[in-house]
Image (cartoon, rainbow, N blue to C red; front, side, top):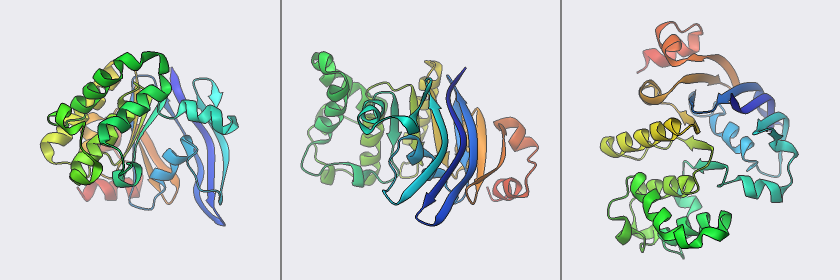
Length: 251
């Protein structure tokens, strides 16, 4: 059953069109990978889903999630969707962490804002999310400020923040880029567990090795257009588009 269905998505930043008739579906309990070079429009798809676009942008199409067109929702309704139903791991964690508050309090606030009746659980849920994201000594790191953490740890804090509410869909924008191999493996295992629980992940990456490890299906994007799609094994074994072949040969 489809959890998310994107239909005929077109996006302009000012006069520049960056997405061209993009359509795809995400099934419940699936990891869908969106692959392409920098500038291909991968991140723009995620920002369109969450309606986090600049005012100068214009978007057309339908983004159906759990029976609702997200493009028709009010901003207030979207605030209830963001974090609770759809989580987002951003590519630049420093831009999304408040330097004035501890990282633990920021993760906790995300949970409490969506589950005000469960504030008694918030601390333990925060520690659990931090542990699952590969943050060592979560009780200690809970009290740390963003400037006290490395880039990799800040990325893991953003992963904890995106997953603490247990969203049905997780959007992950190059989530393993700043992580060492052992932590990357832990994060990929987290995605597998999310899938085993019947929830879904859209993983944006340029790394076909990551796609091979955890992906169920893959969409290949070039210049804002989908040039190939299919299950991971079929695309790896018999790529049809020359661009996909070039990306695979570059591994």
